[in-house]
Image (cartoon, rainbow over all chains, first blue to last red; front, side, top):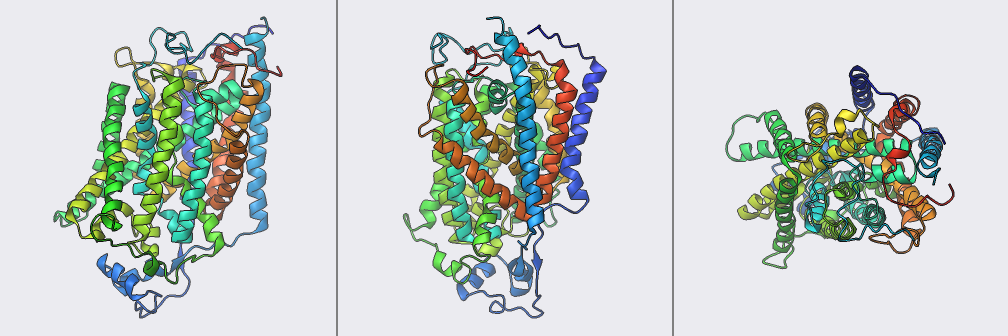
Length: 126
Length: 478
């Protein structure tokens, strides 16, 4: 294989590359946050208007721990009753699987073609 | 077999890029242990408890042990490959030599994001700790945590800038103290020394598996947090005196330390704190070991675990700055990123430009995103990296079978660890999907876009053959 001579990259072009990468990074990480699509918030399904340790499902031993931590039934209400919702659709799960698999297929295919060039140039003339 | 021997005592490193000024080879196995455990041990002090919130206390224990198996596989695979690919960049450099440039670029970014996010999470926790100390010592209003967050990141970046030996010796001392603090808390509260305060049966009553078995799967998401970062030992590859000895020894000793620390942490925390409080790392227990010490009634333990938490966060942030900068530096040196980042400080022999560049990025995340989101970003990047490792070791063994190059360490039972790791990664993807599927898809979307950017634009500036720097024979099948 003929030796590949990469072009010299100017300083402005290098700077632009860094800026592009940083913008993409912040976009990927902050856009879901800004759109309110990030994370799984816990919610209280049925609020208890007059909570007691018993109505919150706490045994005396558990209630004693909460009191030692400085809580009373009212202040511990949301902490104790909030739950995650793990329901999901098969379509969403399939989408995730397809995205993950396609991503790795893309990476491995492109990597293989690049790798063959590397090996050919490194060892081709031996 | 090739005559190149990485285990040679007379050949000081690989000199992979033929540079006159390289990183300093001054580290030993204890520093490698301190780097790996130092990064991770904070996971015992905060963050793992989100797994309790996801599925309850038993779910967190199951996640702890299955994640332990996952990371044992990671440590075994990493020990073999990195004891042979002894160059800065760790898994990035492994991928470059074994799979190909685009995979390497992605792995390099996984590493930088995982460590930079973890660094941000550590700084957030350190800021929280300072505010708790202020409240406990009589400060009337809420302390502004932001100056402490900034100070932590700036101080540790400065330490990293000045030299790797001092940086990781500092890590060794504070990590050892933080680990000892967990042991002392366990001995003091479990009844082995003095009276025990554990009430597992009473606290679990009626709440054994609050979400059922799907909660166990969901807990795997934050189960990774018990160990996330142990793979960072590989970043020291170009700075250890004897890569073939120090890297496997430090990494495997590190994962054993963490398996003990994680199990003890679960035991003492769930035996003292109610699961709903323990499992809410934002509004409930931000620092579970510290909270456990508070309920022990011992002022000495409160101080010890307070310092333990602070030291663990500092050690982790310190190690993260070290690792993220090495990965960024290695990519710059190969021109995967602008070559300006590939410079070594002429006096301190550190990748100083990469260290400085990543400081504001960590600050933005530490000051601008909530803790659980920051942890999730770190976990997602780590998870993508763990998925790469089984492919890496299978191709490594295929392209360079055991008799073709000398390895510093050969991991047993191949390909069982690779298959186990891949299966556990699959389970963890599902766990992430249950709560943070949008971030997962957004993050993979990001990696697809930057991969296209790299393949069609950035790669034109990269030398082809010159990026293969290991003195190995031609891979089989090419």
